[in-house]
Length: 248
Ligand SMILES: [Zn+2]
Image (cartoon, rainbow, N blue to C red):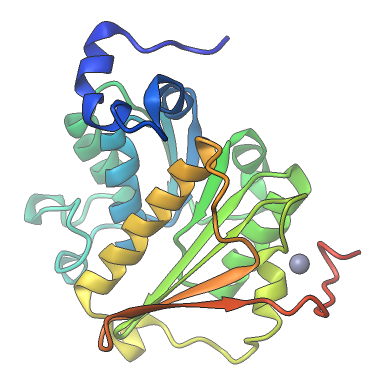
């Protein structure tokens, strides 16, 4: 059964509710949503912070890492006292502090086939991981369970975003086949802290817009943010592309 906003919640989220594109219906869509965030690094912390504060009812967080001191410059959900804790436990404590209305389901594990149920039960998934294997698996499971996916990545001064809605758009695999070269990690290539926060925050924005049924989500489109030139570019996937998953 779907939940309704209490008067206290309606007051709390008033600045969003007054937006005609959101209104009470949009805010209640967020309240009733379960968003699965895979990877609680730079992207995942920025995204979950925004989702939780904005009034998403439930977050499922999946990550196997512990907070390291080198995470602190960009993973601003964490503080020095969290170093050594699991990211999931530290994020859960901090997010509950930010918004006790948000139910946090923390899973301390490396994302794998075992998390099929979490993908199936989510209203939308945010891919905030940093490796190709996880990205492919997340895409495959999202396609299988028809769960919308917002994929984000960031390296150096550049960020990328892609939204896939099964049945309505091409999948993330369509994009991946065009970029087969092995990706360098942020450890090797470096990352400018604000860039990863911008991309994670943008993932949260897109996810909430999908949940609220906004009809102008950029589909079949790679969005590229350039933090040196200060611009966003949109690159449309060619129609001719074949894909063993979504075009099968
Ligand atoms: Zn595809």
